[in-house]
Length: 242
Length: 132
Image (tube, rainbow over all chains, first blue to last red; front, side):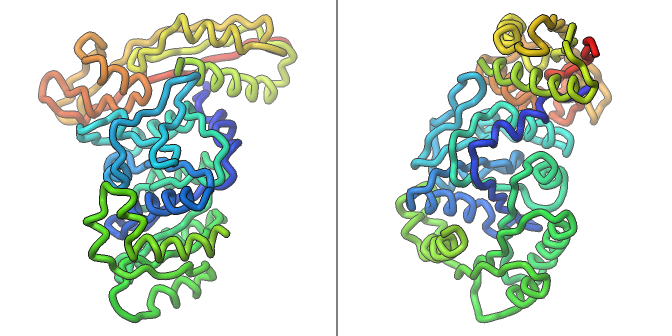
């Protein structure tokens, strides 16, 4: 007759002011890094922030932020863990080091389950690290999370932008709110992404230079916020989320 | 007490359906619970009894447990889930997110984690009976 979990998702998110899905058309563009660093940087600017890693088959935000040995608490559902001042939930708490091979329907079910049982407290922002592309997880998030807004990540590569363009067209078609597009890993002057984003009437939020030092900062939140990457992202974040 | 969150979801969903059906009072709510999720039925029943009010005040919640049947997508083998073969941490992970079964359970015949959960995954609202 009915899946009882779906009807409760809105209630679970009622204390969250903005839900920002950090997404992209393909993998490898720095989506998880941007989601993690955005959560960290907004938290350090005294915003209450949650980070939900919904890239279930390839979770990585725990590695980027060096989150270890923290687990949501069980209390009439799940209470997100606290990591670097961020309320944090990831499937990694349940899949551990094991590979988690999931087909689309399984991804949907796992997403619905975690949304239905997680009790997010009052938050200014819930940042979601999305899996790449426009398959089940993205479609489900659009379907179930009424207040979702997308922050889309591209690189200067034509290949990356080609997939981003398709994601943007889908979001525009479905009238899903778009925060805009961030161009990551910029290595030389080019207006290619900016021009094409603006042609779609989508805000171009800014560009972040390729930062070879960022890899060394993985696992160390203090080092991460001091990278050129994080500083540039913070400039963009403060402009976009004043 | 993860069962409490599931009970809230059941009441919320049943409430929406009752409104759609124009029910003034709900007499019975039938729920199916799949064994894969290892829901503690006693706790779920307690949570439902604590949470029921208004049109659910006199409602009876009937809970039926359904065996979890899994089918390997590689070799076609079909088997019934048993919690006994899992360690505590794996069982707990599956309790919270049943799909993590794909990390901890393999086909007993060919060893593949690529299996389908045919039935008995989690909580399902089966029917609602009431007075209009």
